[in-house]
Structures are given as C-alpha cells and as structure tokens.
Image (cartoon, rainbow, N blue to C red; front, side, top):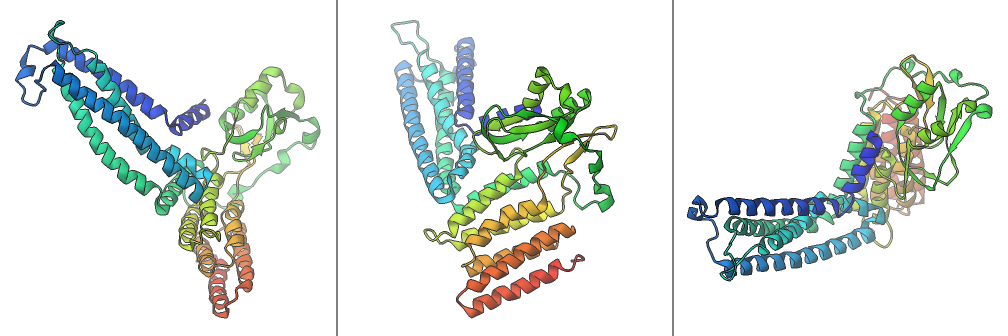
Amino acid sequence: MNIKLSKLWDSLHSSYWFVPALMSGSAMVLAFAMLALDRAGKSGPVEQLAWIYTGGPEGARTLLSTVAGSMITVAGTAFSIVIVALTLASSQFGPRLLRNFMQDTGNQVVLGTFIGTFIYCLLVLRTIRGDDYNLFVPQIAVTFGIVLAIASIGVLIYFIHHASTSIQSWHVIGEVSKELNHAIDHLFPQKIGQGKPEQKQQWVDEIPVNFDKEASPVLATKSGYLQAVDDKRLMKIAKSNNLLLRLKYRPGKFIVQDSKLVMVWPGERMNEKLYRQIEEAFILGLQRTEQQDVEFCINQLVEIALRAISPGINDPFTAIQCIDQLSAALCRLAQRDFPSPYRYDDEHNLKLIANSVTFPGLTDDAFNQIRQYGGSDVAVTIRLLEAIAAIAQYTRNRKDREALLHHATMIERGSQTLSEEHDRKDVEEQYLATVKLLSNPSN
C-alpha cells in the first residue's frame, strides 16, 4: 500500500492541476470565513480599524472586479510563459526533462495563487449589496482581497525570476542531481562503507534444481515501464504461502504484455487469488520514474550531456557539468552496500530473488554513451578520466574498480582518433594517472 500511495503522490506532484486545485479550494473556504466574520462583527470595533476598507458598495465592487480581472489575465500570461519554458526545455534538454518542470512546485503555487485570488474576489463580490437592497459591504473580506492582490504582485515578481532561472542549464542539471542523490539515499540507505566479503555470501545452492520446470509464471496484463515493485508485499506473500519468487525485471525496464513478471515455485500452489495478489505488487506506467529507478536519473544527466556535445549545440561545458554530477553520484554509490538479489525471511529461508542493479551496470549507464559520442572532444574526454579517477578514491571493491578501469581503457583507445598530437598526449597522461589510482586500492 505504501508503494501505491507513493506512486499516487508522485502522479499528483507531477500534475499541474493538483496544487492549484487545493489553493482554489482554500480560497473558497477563506472567502466564506471572511464573510462570516463580516456578518458577525460588521457594526462592532471592526470599522474603527484604520487599515480596514471603509468605502461604499460601488467602490467595493469596482475594487474586487479590478483585482479579479487582472488576476485571470496574469494567470493566462503566466501559463503562456510556462508553455514557452516547457518548449525550450524539450528542445534543449530533451522531452524526458519535461517531467522535472511539471514537478516544479513554484510554478504550481504561482498559478494557484492567481486562480485562488480570482475565485476569492468573485465569491466576495456576489455578496455586496447597495442601498436598493439590505445594505451590506463585507469590509474585512474586501480588505483581505486587497492583501491577496498585493501578495499576488510579489508572487508575479518571484515567477518572472523563477521562470528565467529554471531554463538555465546549471539549474536543470542541479535539480536532476538532487533527484539522483535523493534516489540513492532512498534505495541504498545503508551505512557508508563496504561490508566484508563473507558478509555478502549468497547461498545460491538453496535454489531448487527443478525451479525452472516446476515454477509457474505471473504475466504482465499490459505493456509499459515497470515503475515500482512492492517487495515487502511479495515477501509477505512468499512467507505466508511458503513460496519462492524470482523477479524477471527490475524497475525501469520496459515490459511487453504477457511477459513473465515473476516465476513462482512451486507452481502447483498457485491459484487465482494468489495470482492477483502477486500481480498487484507490480506498478506499470507509460514512463519511467525515479521512485525505484536510480538509472532513470543517471540517464537524464547523460541525455543532457549528449545533447550538449551534439554538433548542433556544441556546448562541452554543459556536458562537463553533467559529468561532474555523475561522478559525485557514483562516488556516493561506491560507498554504499548494494542489496543482494537474494532475500531471506526472518527464519533465514530464501523467499525472493530480485533483479538488482550493480555498480558496474550504473557506471555503464553513466559513461558508455558520453564516451562514445564525446570521444572527439578533448575537454570532455579528459574530464571523463578525471571523474573515473575521483570515483576510484572511494571504490574498494575489485569488480567495481575493474569496471572503472574498463571505461578508462576504452576512453584512452578512443582518444587515438584525435587529430592533434598534444591532445592525445594530454589524454594519455590523465589515463596513466587514473590507472595508477585504480591499481592501488589503498588510495
């Protein structure tokens, strides 16, 4: 249930209607509350306050009408600016980065402020009555409408600054990096430092020999990206029914309809109810999210870097910024214990075999495409080697260091195609320094 709630919150947070809808509802409640105060104390000490509106009904109508009309106009302008920003972000940084802009709480609050002020003024405006009726001018409510108008001006100034800042490359890269670091802390919360090898021993002999023959599959009901897996629920199901589950995919992978999501052993214990319970533990969607997919955030930084070094843009400095953030994230990952794919219950019985990410796999995601497309740029090539050297200082696992050495070697081989001899020499020097660090685990 926590996974589903987290997915629901992520969907609401990524929408442009949720926060404005909440703020509009709050504006309605606020309008009724202010009108109730006016009706309760309209002839009391309220009129003696200097800052309270003391004009007549015509002035109140004109004031609220002006505020309401200006707010809906500014809201339309702000929405147009957001659309332009989304268009620029899509063309410059890639369409997958649009989700980050949609999650921008600042833009949602700005839009909600303008719409909420508009609704508030309308609700208060309808209650004003002149001399031809029972005279009523909600002084407190009108005064608060002025306060909302002044606050909206401040929000507009903030929005202009925020919109111009949010489309700058350093800001986009920084926001993606924050998401990446948050995903690392969420998915790899262990203490910093690698455990002893004997602590990571995996008892694969506990997998039944006849597992593949006797296991029963649970199939995907639709095509899409695997966004999240409720592993706690799967563990509970496996324990209560004495099952062994092997997951075929990990979050972030695309699944075709009727593909095998999980293999259940022994297969004869499967029934329709158990089948549905296991199926509900998998959440599929039209796009990848960072909820349980650390590779997604890495791929976003890689996409920004690839577009930056493309011939049409030719911006190696932005690519270098992405490489710096990728190296920082991999340094954090190098200090974390990656979860074993073999999961045991409280009685030390193997119940779940997951398809987990590995540090070498994440380094491939981070460096492969940048290395291939940026081989002709000396600055990008040298920064890749410097990034690997920085990561090497935090890596103690032999397989992890071998993965880094593989990338360093491939980068050095790619530099042989550089036309300038002094460029090849600079890359060679950095390569030798990187290899020296990787060959010495005490660094």
